[in-house]
Each structure stands twice: as structure tokens, then as C-alpha cells.
Image (cartoon, rainbow, N blue to C red):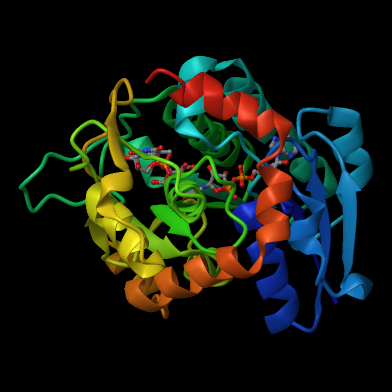
Length: 337
Ligand code: NAD
Ligand code: DAU
């Protein structure tokens, strides 16, 4: 059996990863370590094969708890745990720096002590900043790190923590940088689930700025397969960009959701832009395709349709997470915007 330590495995992408690995790798055992913040949800793990899955509630910044939870000599640490929402980082950066930077250092230190074979840092294309409109520029592994939001800065800092551990202490490490994920169980602070929930409830759909910002969308399962490929076949010390060559204007994403639900475009409400709003993300995934033998399997049309269907068929999940804390968050972020 192989043992993997996954952090943030009760969140959107981490839970999809845990399930995919347990499904595809019969020899895999996972220790899933998650603090269960507002974004962590044990309901995301309800259908997991419990024999090979152990859940431990804990904070990645808690050194003693991490040391107690991380198995000796495990095959990999997959670090998904993070504060992940740009808008929250604009309100307050403290928790982002604590979890995303200090937490990563704690995990690295524990991985060294425990003799972990490989450290996989799940990073983001946002560390590379923003691309201009109307160019053929793409993010590659040689792009400069020039983060623009506090969230992106914390993720870039985490990458440097990992890099330093490798250069200084010889920690075997790979980094993945993916674009915008979508799929089931994404917390409805992010664009797609927020718009699906609002459209379903005939509430306004708040589009920032002119709606012409571009994001490069990928189905969550394809991202998870890319992370696994980087773990299995990635070269020590390298970063891999993971993307599905699927650039979309925000406004087109929003109108596609309205059309799929048979709702009027008059629900769209243009609101004050996000400060420092990155204009365009676009990933060149050639290195992952050639060196890792990875490619995305889910088309945008199929993925968006099945995602919308999942939210429609899982109203209990949606209603549970759109609870009191969420209502307060929503009023603060969108009230009077
Ligand atoms: P998420 O917000 O849905 O989940 C984050 C998880 O981390 C939650 O389960 C939460 O409880 C846990 N967590 C937060 N702070 C913690 C702490 N201090 N200790 C332990 N656990 C903690 O995030 P997501 O969208 O699933 O993103 C997962 C990872 O992928 C993040 O590192 C993010 O930066 C990265 N990423 C996300 C996207 C995207 O589009 N969502 C794209 C590229 C990379
Ligand atoms: O690119 C990868 C990143 O994608 C991840 O690292 C982040 O964790 C993830 O949150 C995501 O960041 P974005 O800021 O791109 O995602 P978000 O869903 O917040 O916004 C997507 C776009 O939609 C962005 O241009 C802002 C816009 N938007 C978002 C919300 C929530 C709106 O117009 N209205 C909204 O209400």
C-alpha cells in the first residue's frame, strides 16, 4: 500500500482529488488533514471508501498536530489547504499569509522530518499575474511570478517556500499551477456556483466591471489528474502549468448559465469592479502534455452542463452552505455594490 497525506481534502478540489485517487489507485491509502474552515465540508466526502481514507481535523499551521498526523515515510504530501478566494484576501490578507505561507513551511518541515518521498504544492496561475487583452501571450513555466492580489502573493510566497526547501535541504518537490476550476461542490463564493445559485433563485447576477475579464476554465477532475501526473512523472524541482485551452469572457460564462437554466439576461447586474482585477489568464499547458503525458478529458460544454445539473440535484448541499455565515459574507461583499 502507498500512503498519501492530503491537506485541504474537505474543500472543493481536495475532495475531488481524494475521491479520484481512491477510485483509480486501489493501493492508495489517504490521510486527509483539513481544518474545516468555512470552505471545508465533510459532506464533500460522504461517498468516500472509508477503509482507505482517514480524516483528521487539524490546522496546517499547528506544528505539533501536523507532526502527529503525517505518517512516517509516506509517499507524498499533496498540499491543497489554503485560503482560496481573492475577494476575501482583499478584505483581509492575514489569514492568507498565515495558512498559505506559514502553513506550507510547517508542512515542509514535517515532510523533512518524516522522510516524505515527494512534496506536491498545488499552486495557481494567478501567481503569474495578468495577461493583456487581445494578445497571443500565454502563461508558461518561464513566466515571471508577479502576483497582483494578496491571495496570489501568498501563493507565490508558498512556491518560494517550497523552492527554498528544495535548494537548501534537498526536498523532492513539484509545483502545479492551474487555472480556474469548476465542477460539483465548489463553494458559492466563486463565479460559477454563485451565478448558478443566484440564477436559480431569480436573484441578480453581480458581474464585476465590464464583464470582459478572461479566465481559463478547467473541469476539476482534469485538474486532479494533472496533479497526480505531476506527482508520478514530474521532474523534481519543476513547475507544471495545467490548463484546458478554454478561455472565456466572464459575461459569456454568466449568459451560458442563464441560458442553460432558461432564465432572462435581465438578471445580470454590472457592479463595481474588484480592486486590482486581473484582466486575462491563459495557460499554455504544452509542458504538462508532453512531459507528463496529461491532457484534459472534459469539454467545456459537457462540464458546465453536468456542473449545473449537480447543483440543481443537490439543493441540500447548496442550502447548507448558503447559511448564516454566507449570508453575512454576501451582504458585506455585494450589499450596495
Ligand atoms: P477551497 O477553499 O474550496 O478549500 C480549501 C480547503 O482548505 C478547505 O477544506 C479548508 O477547510 C482547508 N483549509 C483552509 N485553511 C486551512 C488550514 N489552516 N489548515 C488546514 N486546512 C485548511 O479551495 P479549492 O478551490 O479547493 O482550492 C484548493 C487548492 O487549489 C488551493 O491551494 C488553491 O490555491 C488551489 N487552486 C485553486 C483553483 C480554483 O480554481 N479553485 C485553481 C488553481 C489552484
Ligand atoms: O485562476 C485560478 C484561481 O481561480 C484560483 O487560484 C482561485 O483560488 C480561484 O478562486 C479563482 O480565482 P478568480 O478570482 O479568477 O475566481 P472567481 O470565481 O472569484 O472569479 C472569476 C472571475 O469572475 C473573476 O474575473 C471575477 C469575476 N466575478 C467573480 C465573482 C465572485 C464576478 O464578475 N462576479 C462575482 O460575483
